[in-house]
Image (cartoon, each protein chain N blue to C red):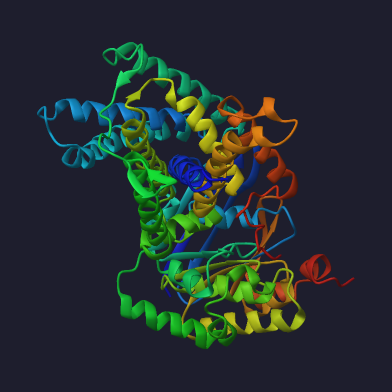
Length: 238
Length: 310
């Protein structure tokens, strides 16, 4: 296994408030690495920093052998790092097909793009049925599918998914989680942020628990799933 | 009512002019939520750029040859000033509270007026602009269309059509829509949103230069203050049509132009309103219309409520 991403002592602040207080972790090719933790733990801030939307205050990010800290956000996707943001953020007034094509904005291979659009429709048939519809008219779960499909359109080496199950029905959540497992089986490397710890940890190779800006516990998904503190804090057991 | 067709034609021509300028307000607002109050001056600078170009041409050049070159020269000047304003005045304030760029825009507007007043030769009073000569096109016995009106009536739809195709079909246009709808996510797609913002300013400035040439050949003169009231009217048109919507800008412009033309002609014929008609009251009725529309449809005529679920 080779290390695809290495995050070392990453610090991020909004003005004087430090949201991420020096975290370190690595993502190896082919793994699912999961960050779990409550609201405000700094998980989303971490992902937004990795994709360049926020500049880090300190520490380093190395992706595929290249330092990322100062690379502007719009150049990061071309390095092979795709980000499906929290709250999905599809482009509501563009059609589903147009949203998917924007995911491949920097690619020039027309035929490859068309093939990948078809692949997204195979992965999520509902998107194919509604390809000409404005994305804002989709349900929450369908928007999540679109956001994931769009992120895949850049053919990333690493896919970052922020809260893909947020606000979804149990059925839809199951569909999203099984899609993540399917992507892993195809060899995709995934950095997953989730509040739904049960589902996320059972998929994860490596997992880290974040609390107010720090990683407080790390291990394999299975280890954390059976860790007593985690069970109490995140899986609602007492 | 005998002169109704004529009034409608006048209103349409005025509206087309408003619409061309309004595009600049609406595109910039659609992408960075800034009311660029210096846009009226961008229009004015387009006019002076066109005039400078005309002066540089050999004397006796036919207007048919000169006008495309004047539009080009005017657009060069207006685009240069607009993109410089974006880069050096607005971009540093992009994450500042919204009042800061707004006040900057007003300051910039005054500064640009004064710069032209000070440094453009003879601009301390109105300067002569090449005027369309030749007879109006007599369509029927109660409808004659001035050449300058025909010019703007032909050019405005053409510009709109080109812009519409660009925004909906081209790769840059798609990127522009994405940036308007969600700038951070647009960056995640690999879109250089700074470049898109510059592009929005540039397109608005180029359209303003077209409008300035149309205005100049109609009036036969331009002046350093002309951007103020026309800018305000065009801004009104943009709000009327639904700010952020490019077709709304044209629709708002036309509605405003028609309202002005019809109010000038007909308000004074309404019994008891003799005192409230004529040209002096045209601006009043234009803004009354704006207020009424905003009361009934705050999002403007074509403004849409965002279809954005959960």
